Image (cartoon, rainbow, N blue to C red):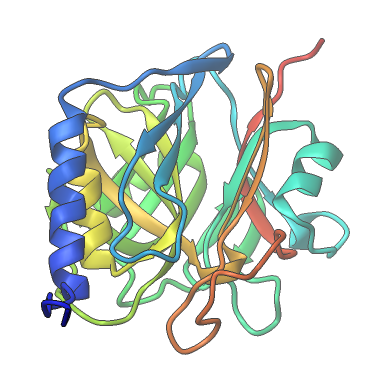
Length: 280
């Protein structure tokens, strides 16, 4: 007997169905696992837009008033790039994610980056509109923030913080997707902030277009207000070594660069954003 022809759904249809399924499950809430005081971790089950990625979103949520955020840069120390796992081990971090994309010197952040008196990159990228600030100076009330550079007074806000890092914007306040539809997709490491001022480290090995990734973030109960791209493809990394969780996650797929899901391990990167592990 001849088989009936069943048309194969397009990637865009699969992506739409996946996001719809995620939105439906989001109402059930998220189960958070404490890591260290002020820091918790959760996995959000997802269906990636096609079949070559892990079906989960990894999220670390940080209360910057209770946990110490740290930017650790090779240019400030020994000039040596490390895997996120080794940044944790060598610098006493409970969690680490990419600080941002890096330039051809394999040390400098693509956007502006300053950690206290150390300047990693003194030049502001004109098209990068998202900036993270933490380490508040005396009199500053918010422990950390992410600002949109195209909003009035953003640079004045950043003057109140010891660490300032500029990256490519994903979501503009109050949770608006600034990406248009495109075909390029990649594994993603992102940094975000929620409605209560908590910083989120977000990692997906499954490759998404950023338009779809942003829609997915907004469909969750994470209450994301702003988000920035920290890295994509095989360089995207997230390590967690605290609270009984030991994870060293690496990305893989990136359109036009590494179009497979075969990368088995973290790549060495020059800069990370982390959370200082409490003393035993």
